[in-house]
Length: 303
Image 1 (cartoon, rainbow, N blue to C red):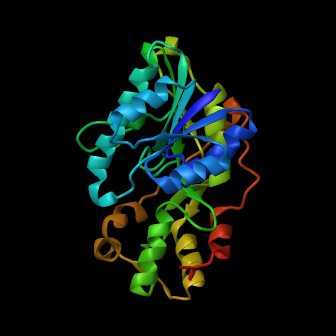
Image 2 (cartoon, rainbow, N blue to C red):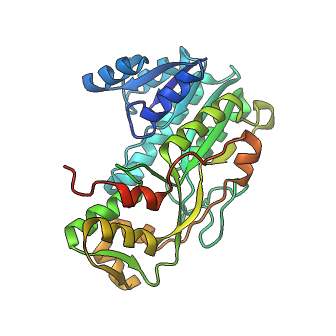
């Protein structure tokens, strides 16, 4: 299968390319830079120039492929709503190029805030209405499921290795700046996690067999979750050990000033299960280290 991958040179995309190629697929990778083009060529992928704002590049990349995996997203949280709108337009463009073809489209979402305070499952639908988060990637993909697109969504938790760890990376930066590693309250609230190599493997499985089918008019949902919920206090303590700074608790009232935009997430309890994903796709996220192990073994003072 020839697979068009957005975010092909990113954190997950760079792990996804060898995953796909080792399974016999050809990869057409989206990039906007010469450096990205070189890395794709070195990895054995075909280069497709463009970015998320270049809708024609997205349309042509999808049109010349047998399937699409959309991992690209701008994680500048100061412009989160605008970036979510960019994501929506990108998915609409990709879906329109695949409409009527029965080709697969795999998009990316998150497990956070799907079911706060309890373990979220694949059966949980995203919140809607004025209070909902602005990212509507899976709703957008689902709108094409009734139009001949085999749509699936991979919901990501904190994706980690020894270099990056999702939102935990921002926690590390704040701890380095403030001189303390903090959590909120008792720190018993939980974040789910997965190693990026396990996440890449799930994307491949979702592409190959993870769709409900156009006749159902539904978007299949999969959770890339290894650890259902890592306590925030454990995360803060690992960061404290790595940076050699004190570990402290902040009150909810202090959280905004200390964490900035991240405060809302640091206080969230959002565990998630991947039991259905593992049963349906045969995915077993057991080969890689857990989040705390990666935090314990990273180089906190590199660069």
